[in-house]
Amino acid sequence: MISLVIAAVLLLIHMLVCLVLSTLAKLGMLPVRGHMLPAMVLVPLWGPLLLVLCARGEAFGDALEDGTLESLLLNDEIRRGMQVQVREGDAGVVPLEEALIVNDPSDRRRLMLSMLTDDPDAYLAQLQAAKLNDDVEVAHYAATAVAQISKESDLKLQQLERAFKTDPSAQNLDAYCDYLGECLASGLAEGRVAQIQRQQYARLLARRCEREDGAALRIRYATALADAGKPDEAEAVITQLVAEVPDDQEAWMLCLRLAVMRRDGEGVRQVIDAIDNQHVYLSAENRDKLAFWRDGGEAR
Image (tube, rainbow, N blue to C red):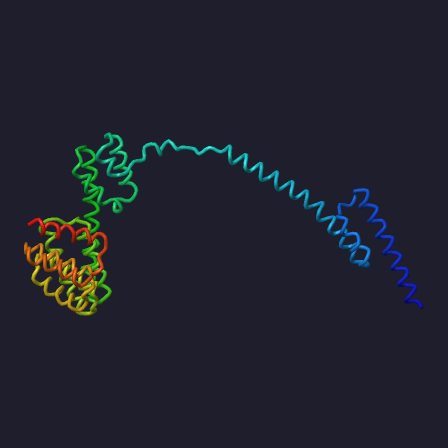
């Protein structure tokens, strides 16, 4: 009996709450949709609560949406009003080669000082080209920078050589050999000094080949022998490598170079024919080299 009374009281309270909420909705004070009212009536307690939460969400949602749209419009106006600023320094930015060849003396000298204060080692090729520039001041700066780089390179090379002689370990051998190869590739050494370094580089690579046997290392060794003026020894190394790895394009290109060094036209044609018959994959650069010698052979 008591439970029925409690249920009746709660149901009455529910109906009163629903009546109040319906009245507020009709007066426009509670922003809810009409299809939600039946759910409010049929679901005691949770129905009115859900209605209030939805009404609150819609009210704040509209305000949030209006605020978001206003913010987006404001940001769009600001972004459209922004102008890209052109820095005054950018007006004088030109390629290094163009500045050294075409531009006026002030641009060349400004560029040279920039390279000297920034990182001269990174601009070694440009500095070597600038040594031959018509501008005496630019050529002097470039020659001085190249001389300083060469001095530092020689000092480091001597340190690596001393370390290798003191401890001829594989680590010291690799470090000395690799750095010597970088020095030769940079073109810093000239004349008799360069020839001595090429011979030393070939000897170091020979010692490395005794320890490790890889195609790339043997190609480096054969190339070093060719650079040192020993084409016969280079050919012996590369011929064996071609027999073992017939699809290595760098090995075949070295064979072509050795034939050219010997001025052997028939040898050049044989290498080209072998590359065609073996269907060796060639990079774009190597294809251009092969086409040059093929066209030259046909012309003769």
